[in-house]
Each structure stands twice: as structure tokens, then as C-alpha cells.
Length: 122
Image 1 (tube, one colour):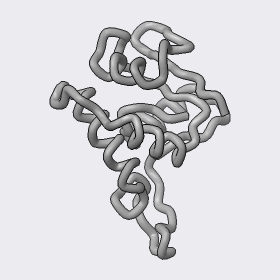
Image 2 (cartoon, one colour; image 1 turned 90 degrees about the horizontal axis):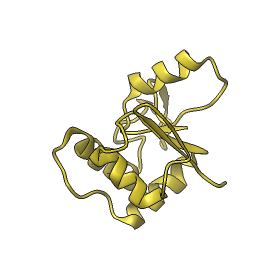
Image 3 (cartoon, helix red, strand yellow; image 1 turned 30 degrees about the horizontal axis):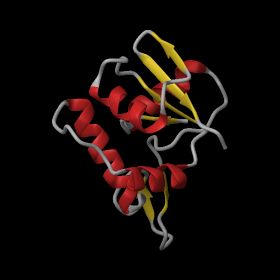
Image 4 (cartoon, helix red, strand yellow; image 1 turned 60 degrees about the vertical axis):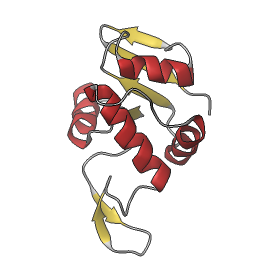
């Protein structure tokens, strides 16, 4: 599952609160980078350029700082790299983030209160 915008602590809180056995993109962890050195997950050495751009630009949209978003190609490359089965946000259906993601993924497949989710075909 990919929780957007990327927020390591929120992602892990969601995972812990559900009690469900699912893997998440990001989260607080230390893992080997491509050279084998220990690095914090979600840092520059651990994310591709496209993943960093998507994370940064969607975070800016969620904060109301940015009105555009990552290009469709950048978004597709990052999503392909992350390989999530689902994308989830807790921003409400009228938020800029929801509008952007609906433009990319289509209508959410699930909506409960301010939480929206898109199940991705894999």
C-alpha cells in the first residue's frame, strides 16, 4: 500500500492501527542503499529521482503550496517502481491532492470519510 503524501510516521501508524498484514511503501526503516551502505528509507540515496519528485510534488500539493503535480510519465515511473496494490490518502475528496490523484488514477475505488483509496490492477 502506498500512503500519500509520503510520511513515514503516518504510514507506519496506519499499518499498526489496522492490524492487517500488508506491506507499505516507505515507513521508518534503515536498509542497504544500492552500494550496500545503511541508509534511512525515504532519503535521497534510497529513492529514485522520479520517486523523489512524486513525493516532493504531492507533498506540496497536499500543503497547498503547488498547483501542478508530477507529470504522467514521472508518476507512472514512480508507481511502477513502488509497485503498490493500492494507493490511499486521508485528505478528503475535494482536496487538491484528491483531485490530482483522481486525474491520474480515475475515481477512487473506496471512500470512507476523508479517506480515499485506489486499488491498482497488478
